[in-house]
Length: 302
Image (cartoon, rainbow, N blue to C red; front, side, top):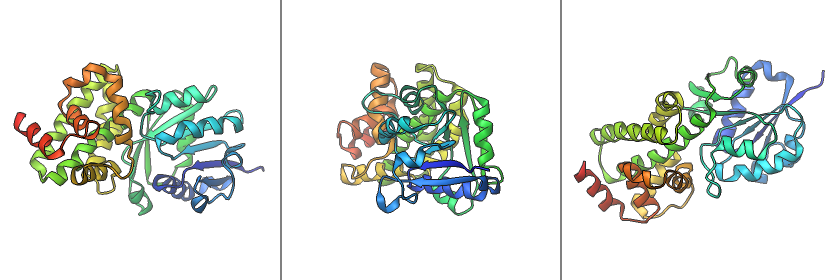
């Protein structure tokens, strides 16, 4: 019997965690699992991207959102019919203000794909702890096929058909986590964090109405569940970056929330001014306002 191929594109934290999970499922022995990274030092496959994805039955995209379109365009040249994409990116493009699902549908002809999102910190997965994901696809057969790859692992998956809402929920929770990192450095503790969390969720729900998304998604695992995990976790890159901006006035690295913020502001237009926490984040991150003064003013006004 010919061995089928699974390709994992990206050998960062989440790419390594997916490789770990796939290896736990004994049913996956019928697959060869190739792990590609554009960094030669981390490219476990030892192959080019083209060779790694060519003929693959499943392709996991475990790369930052700002590199996904470039990768999709290259991958599209080497696909076999019926390949299933699973994207774990949680961002939105700068150039076209497109979410991950929109990029896939733009760059891949008749794609079979899913968005995998939820409380899935790589460090906890590697330690053998539970994780929870929403696997969003317009085709439930795609969900069933991908779910089999994780059978028997500690990743528990639930199905959602509204792909765009899941993709945007991931974007929003990353953006709103930035301010929690800033609050850590400002010195406010659980009372303020609790209040801000309730207001941040209210704002995300307001955005779902503005963008005509599914409100139940924001209230579920891919929205509220992931936001609680991300905003309170030491592993969150968005929280770390928020702290860095507060303490040093600039960012030395990228995070999904940082990169996506300007696109979301652009998509919302003047409506973004109705959202106090989002506007606060915009003033500090995009307009370079003093974080301490902005947060003090914000707390006085509420």
